[in-house]
Length: 359
Image (tube, rainbow, N blue to C red; front, side, top):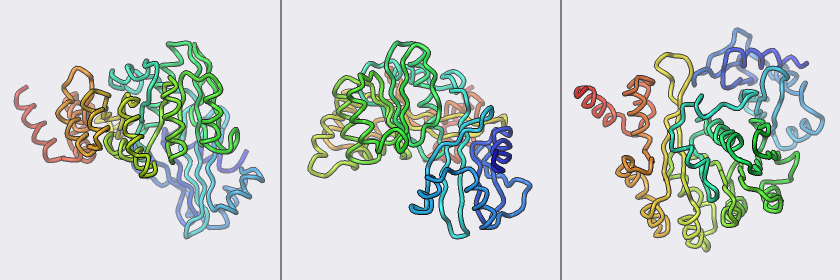
């Protein structure tokens, strides 16, 4: 047992989302989105190095020394899994440990909008999960995979760096591969996955043209592909995906995407009004003839406006502003918290005031 296990156990027991362990600062946890220092002294450079190196393998130590950063998963039996990023910073070594619960949360536990079940039950196509770092998109995606696993007999393959949630087979067969441990790269794992009779393919990050191209090929072959991106909105996710491709093939990619893209889910986490935990405000863009046309004709910039005007449609799509408004009116999130997340807080406040006046 390493000495860091004590801090990790403390972070998990306090239901924190992260432990920050940096030279030059005291150990700090992130609770409900806020950073809270633990009652411990400021860590020295040598002390931090001893703490971190104590639980690394020789191969991981060599990688960290050579590359100045390292991504991996760490398991503390009976407590939780942790996604770890260790790195070199100005004061010395540092590491951030993301707490991954040992059980996959259910769709209902996360209080996700009903339309996401529709995406989980599709037979083929591409679904993008996006949001800023720490927005809970990995947890939402895990809940959707659990929904598929619980309700259908399919072969689910996940490719991650590192593996976060562990999925035990329920009705489906689940294969989980970690880049660096089970495959050389996302590209190599994707190429292999296409020969492994997948029904559902989860790509931890669509980070470059090779990954995007292989993911689209899988969707064209009849696989339901889920991929994650780091963007602030559904429209920007589509733009980022196309922008990852060389200019000479972007027209072709837009054409393919206009047919294969089934939905984009973008989310932010908001503190609950009760002060206990957070909830996702979920923006959903779904495939329609209009969305396909805007993508095909390179009018991606118009998707956000379309989402705002189309959010009341029977398809179930909605903008972030609509999701925030719903959470406020239901009393789950305070107006102040929603305004801190909104792209147009003044308009949100006016809308809430008007609607409350009618109730």
